[in-house]
Image 1 (cartoon, one colour):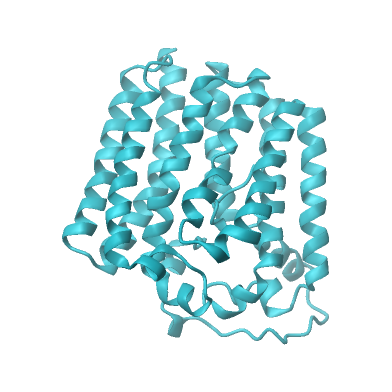
Image 2 (image 1 turned 90 degrees about the vertical axis):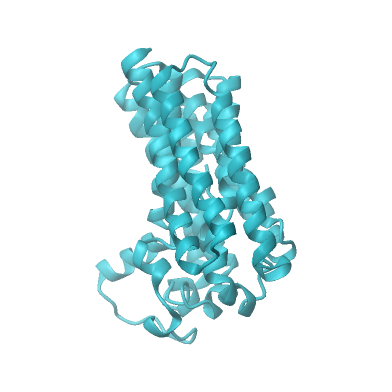
Length: 327
């Protein structure tokens, strides 16, 4: 289970509201030549945890847990929830750590990421590599023995897609990196569904598609805010390659595709709670995207980006509420 939820491009998502609104001048600089010293154990642990990108993991776990409740048509066994959440956290965190290991050269250039341990040098590169691999292997075994092997293999597939296809290739070679790489962040609901049901259904794949179509407008809104950093790091994000106007047009297109995909889930046992919520949430998202076309600005791009995060929380929350109240 992995996210570009980074998500595909999970390495590039700010992990707090303040981070997305910071200017380069407001951030402390960090040198790639920092030599690790006798630092407090709590500091070392915090730096390793930060490589897992906890803010990104939250979105992934929300979609995993939501899919578990929907598949169960109620409350799943607590032990299964805990194992799946822990395994999901570790395997997605492992993917994020490996992303930091691979992208440490890019992270040194970008203001938002230059303080990461792999970029600043406080965490040796080989330590990060072993940490990421270790998390991935342990999580795979935990999911396999604690949930089932379908969930484990799906989680590993998301991890490998994010690291091997998005990070190693797509991110540095094509402006469509987010479109293709978005599939990596869409695996968590498949993992959650499989953990409960032991198989996949059409509804599970629609949840996959929801996150797949959610990913481009989410990250392109961020790219509009951070295109200068991407340009300096030579990362071909859409605004850098095709310009802001084309990026805004595609944000609107993908929000429309997202809305249609959300409504495809309605016939699979959902009632008015989910349907009304999906219509409202998508209407707001489309409204932000349209406003970004009509009144383009950093402020509107920021609003669009932050709404996209709340959108996913509320949408999967509506799925769970619908299942628990009206199933």
